[in-house]
Length: 197
Ligand SMILES: [Zn+2]
Image (cartoon, rainbow, N blue to C red; front, side, top):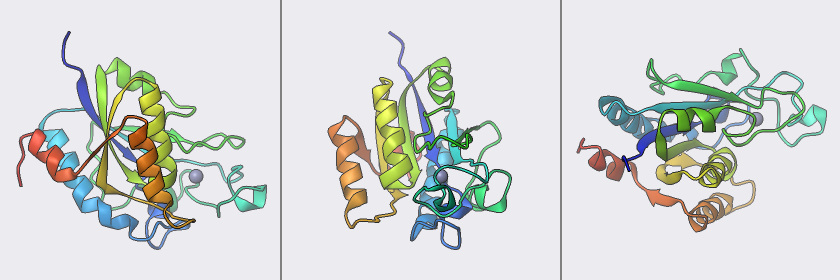
């Protein structure tokens, strides 16, 4: 059996989820430098990378005006939907848009997308995942990755949560770890990839 490839999955590091954005995660931008270090290590190791983004039509079901729970955010083709300006998205990375149908919410990058097929087509057996927000899109993406039979390492220092209820992020991390994901720190991943800081 050949070793399955490891891929990096960066979830929803977009302007609207960072301070100043329409649905800002407090301190959400603070993960960007650590994520960038991991991105650079994956790039040097020529390992595949996938960047998910919330990409909603203006009349998306998750918006308050349509009966949803969130203010309008990440409307496709708008500034708020852009990746955080400091995030290094490499040329060869795959961008996965989700939540693009007006009538369906999609917290997970696997929901209504071809992410699973693309990972499997690339020979990926294990993902390292980080991004925003811990208690929604990172959690649901990690759970779907596990359900798809992938090994999942959660970059605990490269995620940040909304915490509508205090402790939501902690509970989300425990949940994905109880489901089989492994907590890792970015420094550990850099070491594994042979790029000690
Ligand atoms: Zn959304």
